[in-house]
Image (cartoon, rainbow, N blue to C red; front, top):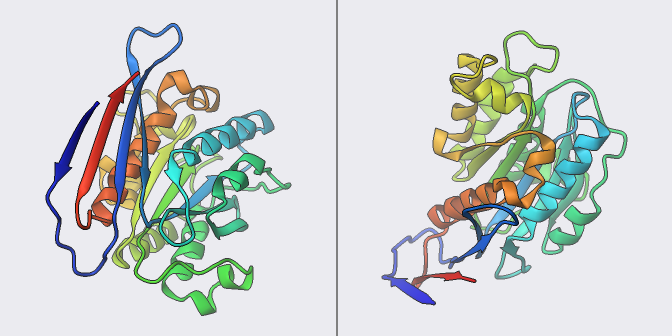
Length: 274
């Protein structure tokens, strides 16, 4: 095992520590190892999961499994660790769970609850933006969601299979609100990570026959940069650990957490191969 210790990174606004651990494991039947990254530190995670009509019940089951697997990558603690919240959205957002250090339990028990409808992610982002910038007046507070901890950064994890923005019935229908609300989240000092699934992955990927340049630009704008956009595959494939999408999203969240919450007094990275 090799340990690398970096010097203290000065950041007056936050005295937080994040420790990252990456473990390499061999996938069954695969020729290469997949990297599974886990991390600990004081960061709030907000998972916004697409429950619109385009998501079948079987696909939702895979989405739930995927979120549960990703959630297990983080160390939760009310005072010193991560906390997680889960919002299901379609035409409007619904709070599944407010911020809690019991998020792995929340994710493993997550069910659809009859929510469906067209694709309005801007409304879901607006819900979280209000929770972060005007908690007392927010719908999130009205639903008894726990407020974010003072001085603790948030990462909004946006999962969708939206079928672009230009023409399809499953398209994003409130792209202007999505831009505005995502910008409000980032302007408040937080970050966004986008996870694109199924049709959304196809619309985003250049060279694909379903590629939409407008959708590509919108997703990059929502995330703040293309670096924070994770391109997936079908729901079935992202839920399969051997495909690497669970690791990809976990690692991106960990990397963003490291940027938001630099080490104090030092950052220790441990890598091991088993």
